[in-house]
Amino acid sequence: MFTKRQLARLIVPLILEQMLMGTVGAFDVVMVGVLGETAVSGVSLVTSIDQLVLSAFSALAAGGAIVCSQYLGSRQLAQGRLCAVQLLCVAGAFGGAVGLLCLAGGGPLLRLLYGGAEQAVLQQARRYFVFAALSYPVIALFNAVSALMRSIERTKTAMYVSFGMNGANLLLNALLIYGLSWGVAGAGAASFLSRLGGLFVLYAMLIKSGHPICPPAFSAWRIEAASIRKILQVGVPAGVEGAVFHVGKLLVQSVVTACGTAAIAANAVALTLTEFLHTPGAGIGLALITVVGQCIGANEKAQARRYTRNLIALAYAVMGVLDILVFFFAPLYMALYPGIEAQTAALAVSVLRWHSVVCFFFWPMGFTMVSALRAAGDVKFPMVVSIASMWVFRVGCSYLLMALCPQWGLLNVWFAMFLDWVFRALVYWLRYRSDIWLNKRVI
Image 1 (tube, helix red, strand yellow):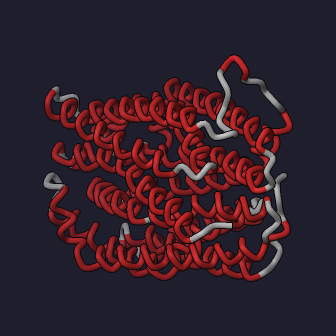
Image 2 (spheres, rainbow, N blue to C red):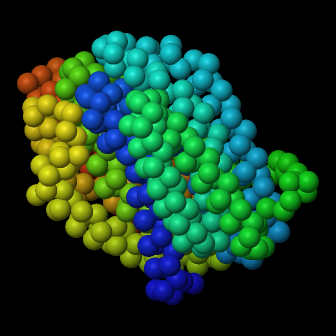
């Protein structure tokens, strides 16, 4: 169903787009680095909440992309167009509701989650969180439009928009943080404005593409409950999985917070790079949604299995090269953070090297593979596995290891996370080898 050239045109822009999307938040952490460890720590605390919210938006968008892809595979274009409208309506409503809740309760939420942090860190986090909350409706809609672009295999357009968005974010960061001395608030405002501009441009390009499933004019939009149910049938389990996953990460963040400001800063520095390293696997996972979704829609199960095997192998190859580079050159990365102490930098380097080794063997199977399962309609099994693995290994073992080996400090949290990765990789590999996931479908 897909030639090698088609796959390359789909995958390469997706990997680059995911890298560019990840750098919007990463640039904020890097560019406030000159303001000191307090600013870095404050932004990093909000970033943990961002990941929780964004995972829900991504799950919803993925649900719409899977349904649209299966409709495209079965040549039901009218239903695909109706599904696209429903996705945009639901994403806009959900993003708006989350943004309003976070604006109203941002301060109490930060105190609840990170009450053990220094007051100066919490103050910086509150300033940044206001703009993060304003960005949530924009991000929800951007993810939905980007998912539709992936469904129609126009990934290069989304990549170009993401590139422009990053350029705008860099310029606005420089202006607002350094030029106008807005500090962390300037970083938040820059991200909001650049994302808003990216949304308008990407939606205009979707309409301009003229694809049969592109949404009609707003006056022709209508709510169709059956299509929304199909989207939620896939999106809700993935969203619950992502929400529980990131709630667990927030609880683990409290363990990091208890280790002190240096540990918070080192964790933030390491996470900024590791999230970037995961983007090739995430981009290939998004490609699997389009590819496997269309194969299942066309009832081509053998092709779905073969494409999954080949794209997982590609994820291992690309991420393996990056992991090797980070292992040897992690100390050079610390030069991007002149405001942190030498002890903090050394801790971050240690974390990055441990991450490179474990990620090399287990991350693609544990996280890229799950996109193929979901694209086929197998959504409840990954949800159960993810929730169980998160609470037993990542959360439970974080507290256990910290109690047993307090001298390891921050590394306890990362070791617990690695156990989570190993378990997921083993279970999803066994699921792929069975035929159960191939016999699921949404439409």
